Length: 164
Image (cartoon, rainbow, N blue to C red; front, side, top):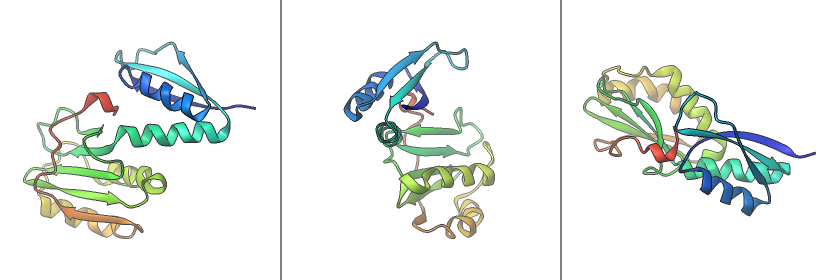
């Protein structure tokens, strides 16, 4: 029995995802896009469990790191960008920001992002110091996660080609 995985992709990610699937020995089917976001396509990845898992990992790595922009004027507060390596999270505060590095992103990246979503609110005007004070007690409990100040943590805005 084949494994199946649905992924929502931007139009410019489709070809790359299809290449990942072909390389892993899986196939893709383009499903009729729903009206969630007109710029996206839903793909179904079908293949062996190993092939589908390989494609999932390749997509996550391809999409890059996570940016959380807490400035009140941020048009897109949470987005992925290939301008950051997979496993890096940049949080932009009103006076700079912090960078979080996840040593084993395949195991922990989603968990760290989920935790950050519970600790942060878009548009919350936090200073870098306040941000570090809020995050450090929870993040430093996680093995392989480091937190550091990064005054230039803004990767120049959303890279919509990398998914969100």
